[in-house]
Length: 162
Image (cartoon, rainbow, N blue to C red):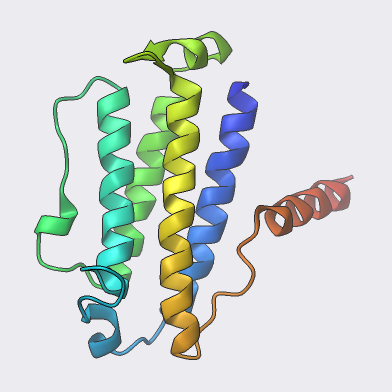
């Protein structure tokens, strides 16, 4: 896998997550904060866990000893979650800028970095699908989250740019 491929996956992850975040606009606090909707988590808990997992993977892979646990803090509001994700995405961009194709092949506990990065994206997909199911049940579907729709939008944008 090449760094360009990882950047595509990261961009897809953000595109899909932003669609879920848009579906949260105006959501009732009771819907956002309900526990135990899927396992022990509700809608807000699922999405805050996604943030925390993404933070922990970046910190771990970049060699930081800090392991954020926003799931253990009071539940973030949807706007606070969106702001935290924006900060996290900027941190990912900065860290990814330090990597090259060879770095992706470097093992971390016998697993190449690229496979761990693919795991982070896939983990986000799991939790977005859980959140999307809960949102859809509330009449707030985020729409299609399939990667192919992201790829089509990207191709259309590139074609429009000439």
